[in-house]
Image (cartoon, rainbow, N blue to C red; front, side, top):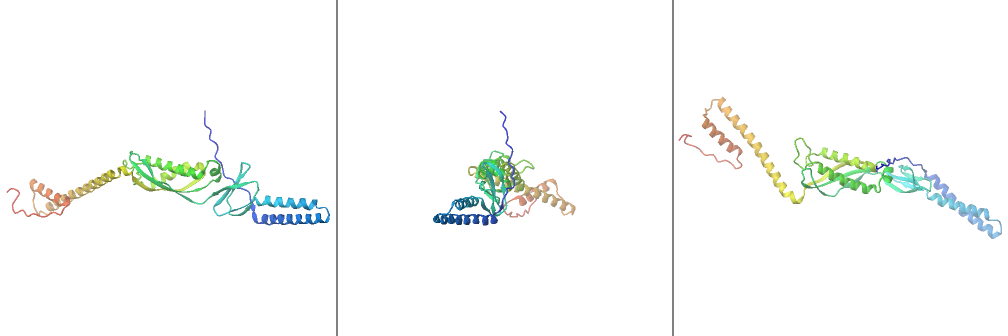
Length: 302
């Protein structure tokens, strides 16, 4: 059986009028209805015909109560989705005091303001299978109220669930800090990783009419069960990197010293003396502790 995808809802502008003129008319209907009913009572006491003012009074009061149901207000960056007996009739985004068809359902109010979703810490495996903890913050807002109201059951819950799913997928697609050559990692990827998270979130949340303004990783760490082991590994790697740099520098300095001594004719070295000098210089340059000089009063041959 082939699955059919329903077309996405599209927001349409709703039709309203300013509520102030209609408020004046509604008050006139209510006051006029009360006056008509009082007049009908007076006519009845006098024995005159009171049917017409009674009917007009009741009709005016019914119309005034009916008209009251059409008023509503909107603050800046708020909207209302208009529904008439289950049919979508548009969305009102203008702030202010409005009046519309009283039969419209106006309970579906949707905020258009920016919102923050501060995700919880999730324990997932990175690309290399290492358990890590990761969390992200998502800045989003509703862009299409029709999609938010009709294409998903609860758009706020949808944003929360899809954001968690996107963060889990991102963590499994990148290594924590030991990627291949020219490969972005969660720890060192920076803006590239955040851009990838934003793009995936936008792809997922567009079905709910949501616009993702920004998504950033706020917490990233190894899981507690492997944190100590990974810390020792990082320390070992840092020591190796530092030692490698020291050795490269020491070799360059020894080479430069030998070249300068030979060029200026300060002393001539045979291979044994050259090896001894290189050994001594490397010990001095690469050693961690301070070196204490020892004066040799003899020679290498005695």
